[in-house]
Image (cartoon, rainbow, N blue to C red; front, side, top):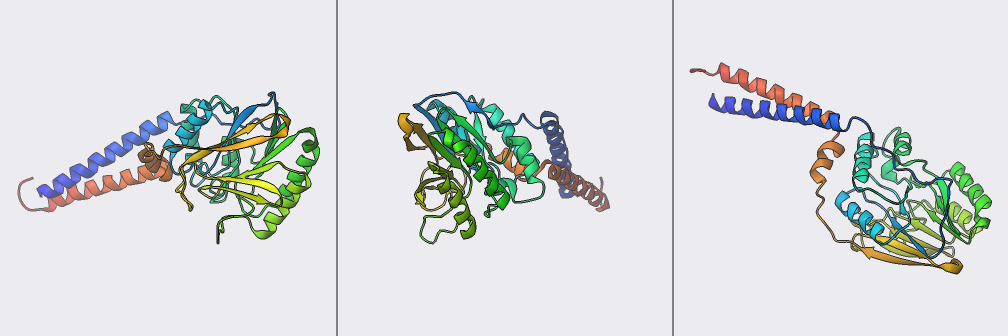
Length: 321
């Protein structure tokens, strides 16, 4: 009997604690944090030399991501480019949590993201949720004499409509700038032996045809959780997917890229490594993000029912109560 009473007390206590936690969480996080929007369609004033930071695939370790954001700002990056996979499954709950985390780090420079497959393609209505959090999935902006274009290839296919948008955008704007950088999520080619984390052959060919037509300076991508350099159809490709996601071969430290734009149309890329730190937000992420808040109420109800069952069993046992 005493065993059932202890089990009942434990279950009812857990149910109460989970319910209280749910009430506190929904009170604090009643509304989505402010969106983090890129300077889409803006011509930002600046002159060479200057630096910008590139990073990608931060979805598994927010502590590493925060270190990278801090490092990029310390290094004087004028803006930050993220090549996608900001979250694991692209739900409203996950984007809401990430926006809150970005608000806490007090970003002082523009944050320019392009969606990854984990942000858009793992469920319905992801596009609307993504755009509410991080703005349009495709856009352009300029800084000084350089044009920056975000292109969405997160489905691995590159739709004709998206390629038409890219072609027309570059045809209209590329002649006005000395440099042109395109950033996307999935690279046109996986340069690793037997690598398969890239676009379909047809999509890669179609994308590179547009980029070479308009003499794009370089392409930045993520998706592969390491650092790789490649050249496709004469265009340098920099693959950086080391901002927190579980690392792929060849294993390199977590990192971001610093691109320094010099005068006369030249640029330099430097990989900046960051320590492999424990994800201090892991418990919060698992409970509130990976397993949405609604599930916490379901678990609370299960513990409540279990506690009531153990109370009933304790009274069914012979002996004093």
